[in-house]
Length: 407
Image 1 (cartoon, rainbow, N blue to C red):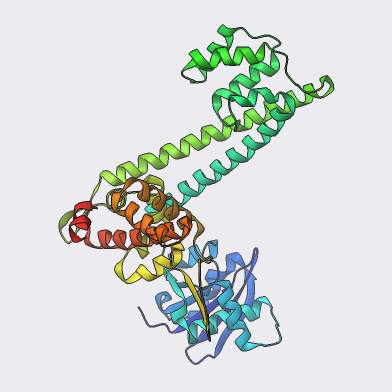
Image 2 (cartoon, rainbow, N blue to C red):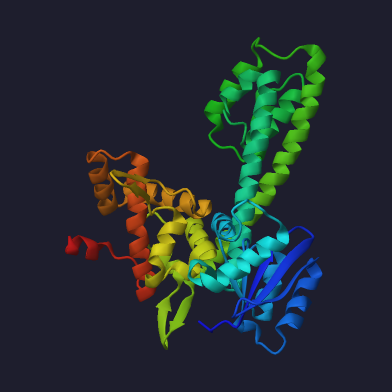
């Protein structure tokens, strides 16, 4: 790493940023609160003839437009956990004094004196940026779909609860179409119901349609007449929102799927030789699907290296936390991690334990030893990460026969 000459701490805010610049002897070059747009020009003026790559900038949050601009200018960006920054602040003041300018000074001094506790952040590659945006958008749309579906479920539960026997989650497009017709028309024939369901893409209607007609033609509990009109309006509104969300969710999923397929089919040039792409390597692993591979590449691609395995285990949450003092010793689950990666590896371990003989045997061994299933799956995920890092480092696909031969 390039030796740093100047050390900058930036306490990021919404509209104004507190900036502090120190030289190698801890002398304060400047400390000022400025508007967001003025931060790059202020730093370029403060560093003078010093090259930006020799200027370290400490921040608590890297997802910020200021950080993006400084990365493009060539500054060395380092991130620190806010809890660690709070401990560094206690070194300078024990009475709990806190303000933005002081926080900027704390970050700059911490980078100067304890730089090994900071993680340097490189600029995102186009692939990492695209995967992050698509996966986070897909996840957000999925959460919104479930939220609005739950609202529709509550309304139908009040309006006509018998219909929920056929779609318990009220989250399927065919059910939305049926709901609109049932709530707006007094009578529906079997042919009309079958036509609605066919148009919505529902299959196996020979059993569903008679069951539906039996419910629709029977006397059943329904909302009072005074409320029915308002509830029907709410159903129409929610179905319209759900259809928009479902369409957008499908579009984002298609874009993500096509991107992953394209990358998995490509070949990388490594030291003049053709090698499988990172996506092809990850997807060859039992339990790792397209979404898990997208999370690993988008969130932790720089960590898929042998010398970064310890950090990768911590970021994904599979490395436990040990608390020991005197005669007491407690090992607990790690909560300070990337929740996206933790969930991705948990589901990958669950699938691997069910689909792969070796992982399944290892998981059962831990269960027989008295571990809870969640604890056993974290150990499976830990073992998977070690294999994944070895595969990516050697650019080889997963070969289960090698593990069985070694065993």
